[in-house]
Amino acid sequence: MAKIVFIEHNGTEHTLEARVGQSIMQAAVDHSVPGIMADCGGSMACGSCQGYIDVRWVNKLPPRSKDETAMLEASSHMQENSRLTCQLTVNDEMDGMIVRLPESQY
Image (cartoon, rainbow, N blue to C red; front, side, top):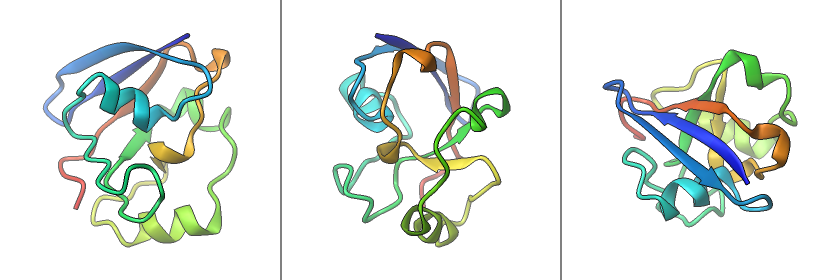
């Protein structure tokens, strides 16, 4: 298990325990974190699970794929540290990761 902290755009924090092997998106959905829409269920077809990965964690993640980058570029809130949380698989090293959420997913 890894503790992941989601911070909504308004500053509300949600700390949850995520199972190793599941996506960060699925952990958020399982814990009803507001701001993670996950409309496509994790198939990287909608971009509604975008999160801003805290700078301390960005370089510890695998790089974005071309498809993930294209999906993020279509969003109105992309930042340098944007990731689709459906593309990030939880591992023990993610314990304490902070994911900030955009004002909206569209």
